[in-house]
Every structure is written in structure tokens, then in C-alpha cells.
Image (cartoon, rainbow, N blue to C red; front, side):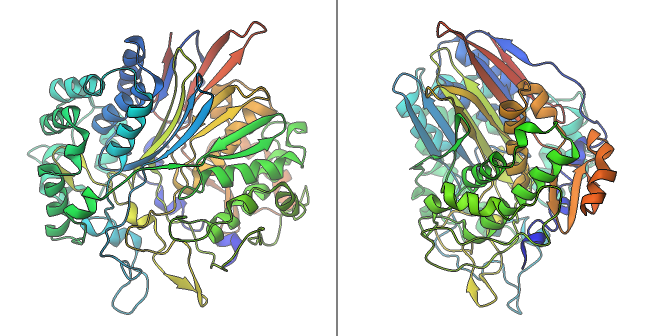
Length: 575
């Protein structure tokens, strides 16, 4: 499979997280400014909860826990305690950057035949998503407990109070929430899920309704007393029983799988970019490598010299990203199971060799994967399979502690199974369904205990003095990489404020087409782009970018500038 097909079908997988906002094109916003601390997240309830924790004297990690717990309630289609996450944390006092891996793992009993049909071919993804077969062991709770033990300032139980209160008292349902429910064909297949999201007449909960979730409140009270209660005891037993006994795609996840889950501390992936250092997650996320490769290729192509979102800019960005996506689809996987040449993929000489394939003003007939230094095994290129139902938030506390966290349950509403008030993930469908192609193994094939490849790209940027100057990320499945890279170019190269950089139109190249955000200014460049050789289409490329830029004065003081994606319902707020 050639690289030009790597993203084929991605737009077909966007209806729940992207088209939900398609009728509401981005509205102009101004950045939010603060002096000491800030939260930018996908929902105002979550932003307020995180800021409340910061005001109580909590750290950025403390606030992150409160934010994610509230998102479990108010944004259940995107993330929650039934899913996984990646968290980057900069400790400004210790001057250390840590990368926490809370990605889900496959049950020990599954193998590479998990998503094959009776004839030995890959099943359709839409058929594999609902039910227990697609669920991996949730990693969020243990990962957050691990980060809190190292960096928390407030007590663990205190961080649960905003979400518990909101679950008991209720939150006001938004139009987007109702739209997502209305357009999901699987929610009604599971009684507990249907009872929560629909009324007695089978109608979805309506905007303006105060929706309560006492079952989730009870679960959170148990976890507030002991996070291990998620992984052993009645909660774990209920998760395993639901997955094994559902009549729709029953799975093999066991209580032993849940009890054995361990979050990981990973090495951050950091790449130089002009005077900055861009740091992100390494495998099993492809985000840090692919964002770094995209920017590294662009650095030598003069992206900073062209007008933002001009035809020249679109051309350089699209061709650079194509090469990064090709390497992503060929070389990336869980390093606990496959060899990933991380150092080779971000080696400046290798990136320069990739850059040499780009001819400004033209379209590459193909964008093949390269052969990075240190590569041992020849893997087969396969298309990304993620569906963009994810969330991202960024936090800076009064001590300079900085968080970039991206969390997910994969598809909108995950596997649609609700247990004790929260939804379970369908992250196993992020694995490649076919274990091999063309006689070569696929790096991201299914294996018991393995973590599926992700595109989540929580990112922290550092200046030449080693100070954090930006934290950002986005949902969007495999499109996350492009969304984040675009925003970084906007801030670092084009000197836009974070809000304007987030609002820049999105674009992606796949299936032989340049897909540009519907109703955006990019369409003013269509004639020039057509002359270069592009075939163009519109797409609802709805990101969920949230970020904070940190400005320093000559005396070492700092101010914060936050932005939230106008394509969704997030906010930034601070003091």
C-alpha cells in the first residue's frame, strides 16, 4: 500500500466528533490572559473544576485529575475513567519533563486473529467497535494516581469532589451532547447505556436538561478513597463481566488483566526546531515522532517565510506531513513488543533526506516511507484506523508546573457499554486488523498485553533557555498530528497568538486528495493549488485544540495566554 492511501477513509470515520460541529463554523475569539495559572479544556465545567483546584493550591497534575474526572461526566463520548491517556508534565522546580503512558492494553488471551473474520480477512471496523471485544484494560486511573503520587499537592480524595458533586447535582446538557447521541446507531443496543442517554420514549436527552449520574458519583466516591479499587474488587469484576457476557461481540478481558495493568514512565521524544525544543510522547504514541518529523521537514523549506495559509504554505505543510505519516504507518508500534527506531526517525540527517523528496510548488506522485537509521525489521505500511473521539487539555500552575494531557476512549462513546456510570473504551480497534501485508508483519498487529498505536500528541515546547513556552494538543484520531503541527507553525513561525493559531483552517492530504476545512479561507487558494497538481475536496476537519502560551519578561516574570478551539465547546480560564 502506497503512502498516498495512508489516510484513506479517515473522513468517513469522522461523523460523531467532527460533523457534530460542522453546522457551526469557527467563530472569532480572543485569547484569554492570566498572570499566574490557567486551564484550557474541552468543556467549561471541566475548565472551572481545574481552575478551582489550582485556586485551592493544587498543582497542575492535581488540576488535571479534576479535569479528567469531570470530563468523564460531561464529555463521555470522548474520554473518561474507562479509557486511556498520555500525560506530559514539566516540573519547573526540579527542571524535569516526564511522560506518563496510561494507554490501554489488550487482554492476555487475544492474538492477531482478534479482528479477522471466518475467511481470515479483516472485519469491518464499524462491526467490531460495539461490545466487549474491542475493549482494552483502562489505564487512566492508575496513571493519574502514579502522577499524583509524584507531583500532587492536594489530597487525592479532594480532587474528586467537583466531579462527584456535579454527577449528583447534574450538569446542563449542551446541543453538541444531544447531537452526538442522536446520531449514534449503537447506544440503544445496550440497556444501561440507553437508559442514561435516552428517555422512556427513546428520545435523546435534550439540550438544557439537567442530567445526573448517581452511578458515576458512587464509583468516584469509591475511587476517591482508593484508586486501586478500580483494578481489584467489585468494579473490576463488573467491567470484566460486562465485557465477557455482552451478547454483542463478547470479549476476553478478565479481572486478572485489569489487576495486572501498569502505567509506564516513558522517555519523552524531543526534537530541535529553530531555537526551540518540541517535546511529545514516544511510542506507543506516534505523536511526538510524527509532529517532530513534520516540523523538521518544514524547517528547511522556509515555512516561516511564506504567508500563513497561502497556497505556498499549504503545499509545504501537506507534502511534509505526507512523509511523516508514511513513516508513522510503517515503523511505529508498542516498543514493548516491536523495535521502533525512535532515534533514527528524528535524526536530523534522516529528516534532511526526507525533506529532499519535497519540491516546493509541486505534488509528490508518492510519499513513501523511508529507511531510518537503526531500523531492524521491515514492517508493512498500513492505514491508520483511529476514530477521532478524544479530548485534550493544557494546564499551567502558579509554580510553573505544566501539563499537556490527551485522553480517549477511541470511538465516540467507546464500545457503548456503560458500567457503574462510565463508558468503556474500544481502543483495541486502534490495532491493525490485518497482522501482515505483502508477506511482512505489521508493527501495530494485535498481541496480548500490547498497547495499540496512537496519534495522541500532547506537546510542550521549550525555549533556548529550557523554559516551557507552550503546552497544547488536540483530539482528531490520526489527524491530531497535523492539527498540532499546524498550530505550532502558527505560534512559532507566524507569530500568531495561541487563539488565532488554533483557529487556522485545518487540512490533510490523503487518498490522492488535499482535504481542506469546509467554509474556510483555504478555498481562496484553490486555483493556485490546482495549478500545482492537487485534487481538492472539502471536509469537516473539526479539531479540539486547547493550548497555553507562556510569555516571559526581561525580569523572569511570566504571563499566560490561553486558547480554546472555536470548533467545539471548550474554554480557557485563569488568574
